[in-house]
Length: 347
Figure 1: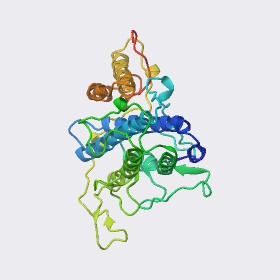
Figure 2 (figure 1 turned 60 degrees about the vertical axis):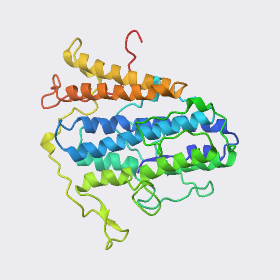
Figure 3 (figure 1 turned 120 degrees about the horizontal axis):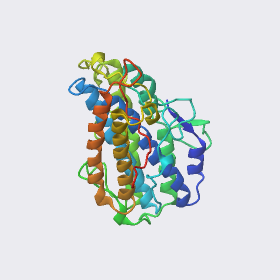
Figure 4 (figure 1 turned 135 degrees about the vertical axis):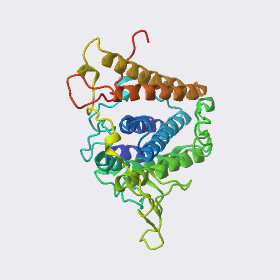
């Protein structure tokens, strides 16, 4: 599983002021974002019109990672902090560890879809401390490394302890959108709002303490990815130990309908002045616009979210064109999106 340095949890549990949670919530925003490029790369590698169930499941998880990123930004704003999205160090280096994900050596890259990547990378990122069971965290029993869910739980506990019932941040900065259900993305005005919102992040990623489902009866991310790996739907089963089994409908997968992306493509690998490089620059220009738009959205212009989400469509179209382009000098491969932080000229 993806394990983070427990120092981050210790900092949360020993905080004496809400301001001490600001850098931790900033790390949470960075962590939620950092999973999106690997998931999108796998999804973009699926040839259009093929492997629809793989595409649907990954897309649903990406949307929820965007939701979690927005929730974390809302909480930081509610505590009177300021989210930072438009800096180069916001984007991790791929391949490499995710933010705070340094405990078990998990290296995350930008690769084509495969059951191996689902099992060895995506499920590792999303796995709870123990699948199905989520335990409370305390400073006395803190191990060297801990899970993402425990990190969020520690922040939740400290907000409960330190925050007033009505949170001090500017309420006008709270982001809501018709793009997300109102019971999942809502204004964080009170301490209870913050606690409830963190529960959404934990349960959508890991499930509840007794079920693979979140509070909206949707499978948590870990179990959705496990469906893809096992190739069958997880369904209720009264004969199974935990009430569920992978005995539902088969999820078909056609490997031939996956573009053979060169792993971890970089702009520097493409010939100067080439159409391939121009297309990659176009992609990274859209990616920068997305991050810059999110920064503006989370820092006083919440009405900008829907326009920013629209940039995702441009990103998708360019990525699909890239994924179908043969990689110059690398026979048998096509070009993967690089998700590099490159500020376009004139920006």
